[in-house]
Length: 236
Ligand SMILES: [Zn+2]
Image 1 (tube, rainbow, N blue to C red):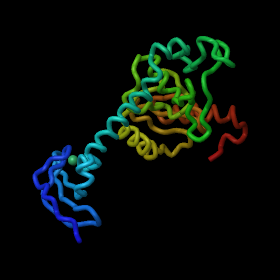
Image 2: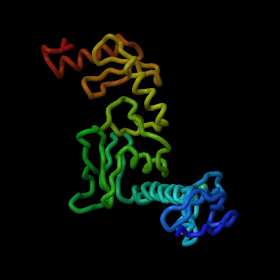
Image 3: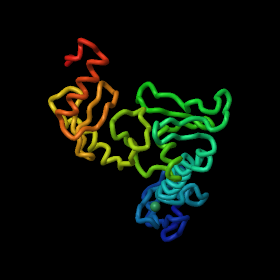
């Protein structure tokens, strides 16, 4: 014999209010419920009574958001400016980040971290946590974590000289990448750098410098290539 339907219309369970009976299911009755957030949910009277169903799912979503926020804060919160400055010395002229105190097995003055093979960025770990050196340098210099991506102006990802670092939003950074692709000068190793309004000369990933004119950049680049490649200076 089917169980009688106990009317719970209008009763409140957490954020849910039973709106109407939908169907019997096994030993339970299913109810359409309205949630305080404006959402709705179909659930059993049993779940409502024991407190398994308290919302349309919004409670859980809010909870996950809070946890995520906490985790994000924690990521940046592990290292702070004070700790970074105590641990590391940064030379803005050369971009070198070195140990300011011995951290076994490193001595004072040893370079911090390594170059990440895949990305080409200098990276380091502190207490087992992974950081981009450029971001840690930003923290070291400014006292706060960068509010966006740290961009290497000359495109050399290991060049952490202070003058070579800037913070850009993610959208800006994507624009720079595409802009670079459009900045073909027709001369190998020379492209226009829009922000500075000058021409960049480089060999492979190695940055040579910024120049006022394309010809100047090309000439310096050629001289550098001759030094580096000898008779193969005319490489494509
Ligand atoms: Zn809800």
